[in-house]
Image (cartoon, rainbow, N blue to C red):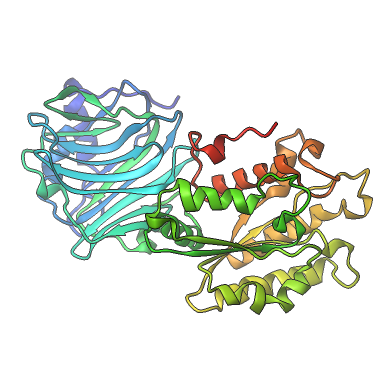
Length: 430
């Protein structure tokens, strides 16, 4: 533990001296920058109230917080400024069931309250931000915009601000605090201006891919989207699921129903074809992808390439690059997602044990093309001590109902919509 802090009123003066040295002139750097990590156990908080006067007049600006959670709580404040003498007068950037939420209230009146569907309480380090300017409010993760609205209240819209905390909110109804955070707040900073995307990316120790941000916008927004999930027999999901859902069907339930998007008008189309190779997917691209006008295109391919003459590793690499670029060249520049094949039983399919090479190639293409990569191959091995988990396979090659659910969970977690309380995420396949 690097530092465990409960900075109450008695310690405020010392903290003020520390922070005062970091406060910079308006328009240059942050007007507040607390970069000493604090470990919080759900009962503690860091009191920055001696700095609230610097922030109180701001009607435009940026808040950036880098953090890592150690538990899943329904409500956890990351950064909160409030009037401690009044009920429900506060500006708070917090996690709500893992989702990122920004709210501004003035004496009970809600001026803005926006919340993502994507979640950030997975125990990994995340840098989130809110920017508020004349054009509206935007939430960001990893330097990328993930949600936007036209409302734009900020600190200056809440009168009587007297409390500023990391890890809790306080008001007259909760003088001891509420929404306590569990985990580490690495850094919290505020600017008196709206940072650009490049500036936000520069604030992130681990920036997100631009494509991950675009997918988050699709998931968090209310505009209907079309997902075209394509590949071979594994994506097709025929026969070997034994009547259970395939991974595209689990994804459909999670996105079209459980996320609560208005009128459930996101459509998920499975254009996987049994026996398909990367070459065939390219040749049939117009029918299997273009025809559906997608916004996001997850692609899982390669299991048949390894067993097809003329489709060795280098041809496979070239085909993947062509597929990624073909997706991006479609109207609206849809987002490609590459998904590696799963490992197979080496005893039953000795000719396909080289799929590890194909999974590595796919990861390399994703990195080169800056595409999101969902690595099922290594997820399966990591989850079973380096051995192929035969219980996830039907015939030693095709995933069974358990394997499909495992792939759906990996996709759900990597695209940040995991919720242990959801029927899809908590499903137990006997």
